[in-house]
Length: 293
Image (cartoon, rainbow, N blue to C red; front, side, top):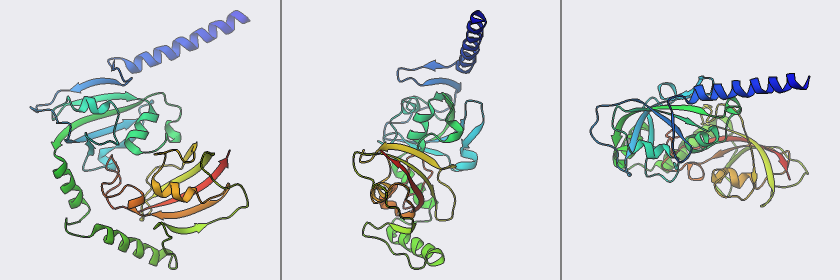
């Protein structure tokens, strides 16, 4: 009996090993732990400079090759990566710096790295069991930061001389008038749309908290496809956007709230690093404090 169990375990190990080897076939591992493979060579002449912005056609797939994000459906103008941005630290950038227009490259990346660096979020449920996810890109254009900012202004219908922050506040006011007529901004500029109350422990610095949250745009389109669950030590820098940190600090275990976070407490005048959230974009968040330890 014991020999049969050992044999079964050996077969399972070999099957997993073969599956992983097949997935990594043709890929090279760099010193940062990324796996990459050149798919096609373009006809461009120059590689981007460190201060450039690259425009990519991109497809992201789960380990079972199911597409969960692509520029065709989720970013029709392309995925914009500012190579000098402090928000993108992954070694993918090092590879982008060596490409020319038309080059295509495939990466295999840990889900935790990809979702942190390109979506500013934790790994969603549909990728939670994947050890690696596939990120295929084709570099279509290299532009300057000035050109990038001009494109962003054009895409949001904003002129450089317009007071974009005032326009954002007008959009929020219009939303409130239609949906939450009597809600006003609090002292931080956050709009609390509704809130439940408990007599449980309050969130405080140094406590390990578990939260559930989901963000949407004012038109209801979700920022993340599914609700996010996150555990972290409250007070740890850069875990969440400022607006969420402020509100979470006022909540108790078991409480829920729905809020509007203005862009200055979210992704600001530049938008998110991957271009999925435009500049000066207010966001709606539903938050629940699941546990405090």
